[in-house]
Image (tube, rainbow, N blue to C red; front, side, top):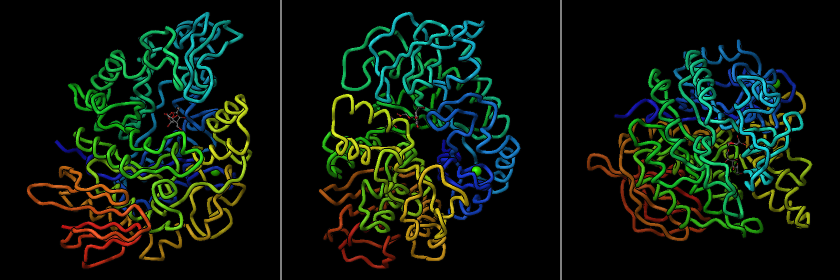
Length: 529
Ligand code: TEU
Ligand code: CA
């Protein structure tokens, strides 16, 4: 019943910001290869690689212009083969990003489709008239194309036209490219916005604050059929797994995706816990509520057989800055790491999380690269929102918060590049960087390593049931039980000391305690058995 992907820890690499090997300021595949041994030492068993395919980078690689080649910024197919080779010798599996809701408008299919060249004419979604749908990136979902003299649909940026899954040829293309990568030796896919690829109808949607039109494409029956088809005709032939990035899902939909017959996705990323501070007020002040957060986690932990657990990725803010406290950076990083690795499901660590990296320290819009941030700013400007509010909102939401380059050492630009980084490195690289942490056995990195090893040797953490035990304003306690053995996970989400009634043998502690008197220090976490 349990497979290798249930038992391994995943590390997400955002290649552009990971490690630059040739001084052009952009992270690349050779850079990844040079750091693989350290990931192995940390205990990583799977790497999820954000897109490295050819792309004009309107959305940093999530706009693919050629699925079969590597963007020259990142290297060549030989470099990719070398990465797969080296990963194999270290017993690390590589999972690629599969972005198939849309391509780039510079993809050959789109170039031909806009000229009505067969068989590409209906590869995308064209109409004489736009409907009222709005995109994920704060703009209209339709753009007029002068060449074809029709509108095309794009649920994301203008340069990301949506593929037409009513056309069977499109699905054949997708199968072909999946097989290409599986034959190359990748071990699966992280499937980008995989529950919106099928649009049932193109009628106007009910007017909503966000995503007008979504009732016509969120988790439709036709979407399930496509995923089942991919499972039965492609994925079943390989020893691989899929993790779906699924937007606006409930556990009921999660079950349809992961627990039906055939299984559509092996696990999914849900967003509910990440939305517990998504209230309008958050744009102006810190609005994290542990109760809301823990409730969302418990709901998914208890309703799904298996979850893809995460606190960070390339679209989110840094967990320390968001759920912890930068003033207690290392303490909260360890506490959050312990929590992530103690939940039931496959843990996903995002690059830099293992050293407690924080949100960006930028001061103005010009320093941001992300298309979503720029679109949001333009949108707010249209409504005459003053610039200091716009900036305060972007600071709290921008995806560039976690896209700042990885902080390797104390050298210029944190050792990320010998040239000019494509996005500014956070100035706190002097205090937060991998090299210092490797030299300090009490660091966040060493704690992650210890915690991963603990998890790998604990059938309770790997296979046990989850149950929430206590949640107060600042304290979150859950237990994991397997074959009548139980571990208690105690997490202090505040800088206040907390007195609890818990006793027990200390299995692991962020403060290296050997005995426990019931009192938790600021942002302390402990596992009792
Ligand atoms: O993200 C989909 C998605 O839901 C996000 O765009 C989300 O709405 C936003 O990040 C909230 O701030 C995936 C990728 O992870 C993202 O990087 C891409 O931009 C997007 O799909 C389009 O491919
Ligand atoms: Ca480079």
